[in-house]
Picture 1 (cartoon, rainbow, N blue to C red):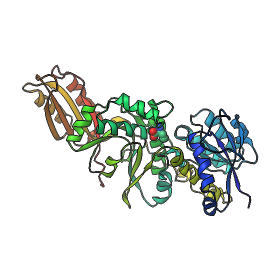
Picture 2 (picture 1 turned 120 degrees about the vertical axis):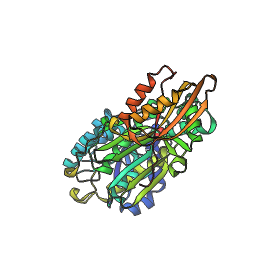
Picture 3 (picture 1 turned 30 degrees about the horizontal axis):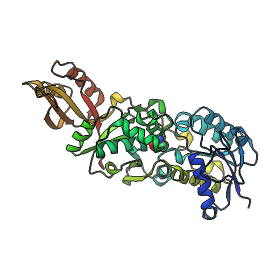
Picture 4 (picture 1 turned 180 degrees about the horizontal axis):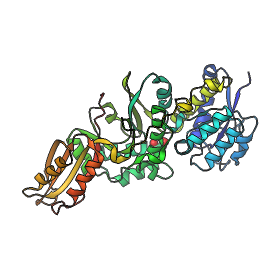
Length: 438
Ligand code: HSE
């Protein structure tokens, strides 16, 4: 049988990695897929640039439209990123009857509903394993391996750059800016590093995970997103003293009222496996009602880890090329007509515990006032720690860990506490999750 012909959009890190993996492992890959797979076409902004892969036998072009319209190409692999040109090219590829594999999380999170609907009408597949957590096959695990479960919640370290920054701050007492500069130098960070540190990249990925976990449409615009740029070494140290690690988590939980969809720095107990996922590594913890908690760990970025997911998707597409489109695994895990309209909860309605760091005058009654306000707002204290202020002996630093409460109650309490004269800077609040098996 003729090999399947693949056209790449983008021949950078992941494109080059994909060519190398397909060539190096070609024989085993074709034994798995049942057919040979060859890259015959590729587009790149500068076709003369030095590359990490050989390009002999590949028809190169600077115009990506040449690839998505070429009748020889059966599968288009989109690796250019962004969500404007990439959207146009993917929709054109679909309209031309081509299957699509993409590593583009922004594209799927923001335009996936439109893209999947177009693909369904055309009877083609759009595979996107590489869009979330690089080489970890988390889409396949949730969509297929856990198909017998009701997923209750999932929590992931799904941005390697952010995790690298927090790890270096904790282990080497380095400051935020110097670690970010190093992450950029090492090539982990997005083209715009605010996507990493402000949680946008993680929110793209969480949006996708929540959709396939709960069978809801992609709703990136409703994801609550908070970055790590305000995390200080002081909070990292206090958290550690209390037995917690601060991680930048993407968290989604199904509750009776709706679905929580949130990305923010989070204290998690040090004894959890996921708390020990350090550096640029990614991990996703998924709790199913039948299976219990399951953890998936691996490289979240990089040429060959991402290529591993891209090639896995290409093999999947090749295996089902001749199957009836109705009998394929649905894009969002659930049949498109069976997606649920569960609401996404606003952050005010989210239930979580908190770490509070309060800097206040060290005098009688201050702590009593604070605890009264918390009690008045139905917030119960789990533990507390008072430290002398580092530079001013008339001041105290109070650390409070609360039990789970509703965010709007915490907002009310903090507004009141922040208004006290005795409080000398805005209270620092970091959400806290126990991520236990219940
Ligand atoms: N900038 C991303 C990260 C790359 O740091 O995880 C992979 O999506």
